[in-house]
Length: 506
Image (cartoon, rainbow, N blue to C red; front, side, top):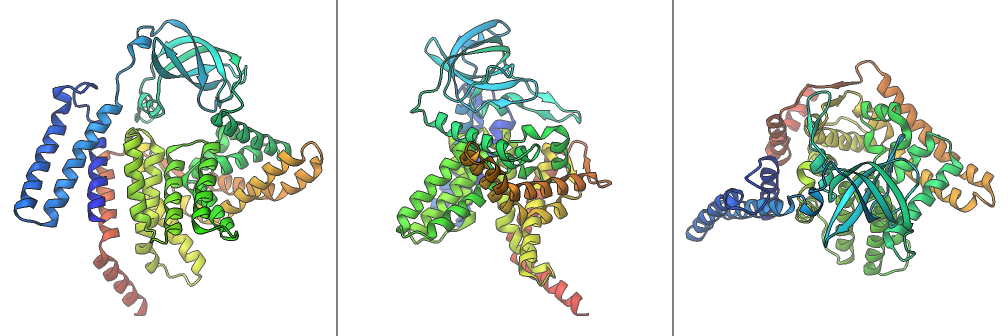
């Protein structure tokens, strides 16, 4: 475990340093490689010390420095310059033919469509900001024209800089097409898997629309497969202020619930362990593909698949090791996730809190009911773990997040199940028995109405949330250093627990 921690922390540190501090140009020049060479020299020193005098600390230091260098190198490879084929047309009106590669983000005034375009043997992805009509789908071949631009970083109202360019680049998007015009030249072929998954998603959402009114339709869709566009700004702000925003986006929690359902359902079958694991992995990957393969969903899906593999091979599943392994695999695949995808960092922090902080917190809770004791411990652990990063990213401090999450912790899985039932009922019975579909969707209506009530009333409380000024990153590092110490120090946990027990007995 020590070597795994050294490897993952080293690789992440290299990616982080190369992302945050710009070492020379984006190409692999001598100046850009200087920090990598320095890390390799440190690796040689530690490796030499470990060879001459074998000690664990020297070996861990060598592994850490080697993977710092590899992390820097991997990030520098990912940080490619803009392709000249397209860059020379910046600020000009251009037209291309391409393929829609992601489900359009339909908003009140426009839609944002990711389009894969190839020109002169060079391919890139552009984000077209176009009117809501015509409606396009994943896999459609389209003609697009618009003003070519590059995304720029911008500052929010509190002075925080959001690297919008890197945020889009993590999905391969390098250019914007403003004031775009779209025309479908050929619909997606029937054999296109991404197009099929998108059609299933929209059929499910149409089923919800047939059985539930707004805003319960949008909330039910957000609970099951993510997405909050239909809720409107006011309701979105309620979920943010109440600390419940993770309910309406596709998070690792949603995937974890689906994974538990899949494993429970497969346990009732007569399939062998290997076939159950394979079927479960396929079901989880299909769900993530339908809902949208965000970084947080992929992280949870990979951890669930590792758990299924452990069950199939009769091996011990350790959540901490699985988390480190998944983080390493995801950063190898896309190092831009670490710094430029806020959801990924929050998801990893929340999962780490559940794994390592929950056992520290739970012994100190004087609650006899086992369910509420566990619920409070896990909620506290997740909230504490994400708080420093949340303050740094957004500055949002919700004082009602803990009670609001406790009120919804047992309701969210029910709401997901009832909402899934409502969507399928709408798909099956909308044409032949619409009343039956509405009746089957009634539990989803009650569940989503309750969630909306909790979010709205929590957000409406006086001093429910604050927006703090800029939270410096060094405070984030200090906060996580303290949390890591508490989580890893058994002496601290034992001493504090004994003191509390002694105080309670007086």
